[in-house]
Length: 234
Image 1 (cartoon, rainbow, N blue to C red):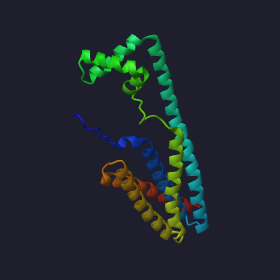
Image 2: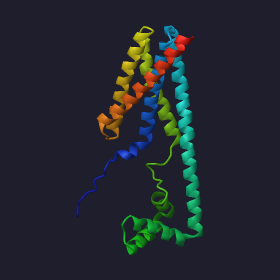
Image 3: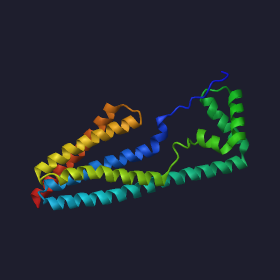
């Protein structure tokens, strides 16, 4: 329509990279640190020992998350780069085959053969590698691997998440009171995290809250049971 303006839509999938790392980091920080504190507290240790274990878990966990995310996402980036190099070579050595391959993809998506051939021709003339990366390899600017972003996001959010049950332990007496306080606070923190993550990604809130709260509580219950058994046997 003359005079009409394009309305740029904002889709939440553009946040998937950092949001996944943030939710994973915060969730792991809460669950692992709370489970560690509950497990040590169940073994009837002193408060200083429990807090020391919690701080050690926070530091070690943040470093582990950063390193793990960086290595994992770097592996993804290396795979993407290798696929793009292979595709670049194939485009240079056999462009006709690559054209037919791209046109076939569009036909499977519902275009007629003539239209699919024309679309493939125009897209390859504009950016052949970009077209094959997007439509053949499913590599886009949204899903592409970003190792540093994932590592930093996971480390920071893990630290923030781990600090929450650690703060609850700080204000609690050692033993059963600490176990109860940390468990209840952590489940509440997990529920809040699930709600924030769901709202940020425009996903169902109730489902996300129940999922993270249930599995977090289960992890703490198992760790507390192990800690109690270890404490009873020592």
